[in-house]
Length: 125
Ligand code: HEM
Image (cartoon, rainbow, N blue to C red; front, side):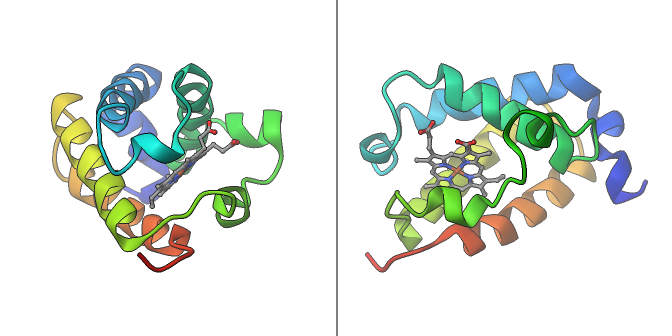
C-alpha cells in the first residue's frame, strides 16, 4: 500500500469513527490529559475525525471547514509536556487496538502520529 491509501485500506470513515471514539474515551479518563481538554469532547472529536481523515489520505474534510491545520500553532495555548505527549500516544495506542486497526497500518499510523506528537510538544514539565 502507499501512504495515501491508508484511509481506504483501514476501512474509511467507519474505521476513523471507531478510532476517534476509542481515543477520546481514553483522553477523557487520563489524569495527565484531563486538565487541558474540555469536559465535553464532542466537538474535539468531530474535528479530530476531520483531521485524521485527511491525514490518512481521505477527503480533505479538516481543511474544507477550518483551513490549514497549523497544528503546532493551534496547540500553543495548551502546555504540552513530554509527559502529556506520552499520555496522548498511550491513548492512541489503546485506541488503535480497540478499533481493530490491523497491521501493517497500525504501526505505520502510530509511527506517523509519534512524529506529529513530538512536534506538538511546546514546554518542559
Ligand atoms: C486539539 C492536546 C497531539 C490533533 C487539541 C486540544 C488539546 C490537544 C488540548 C484542544 C481541544 C479542544 O479545545 O477542543 C494535545 C496533546 C497532544 C496532542 C496533549 C500530545 C502530543 C496531537 C496530534 C495531533 C493532534 C499528534 C494530530 C494527529 C489535534 C486536532 C485538534 C487538536 C486536529 C483540533 C484543532 C482545532 O481546534 O481545530 N489537542 N494534542 N493533536 N489536536 Fe491535539
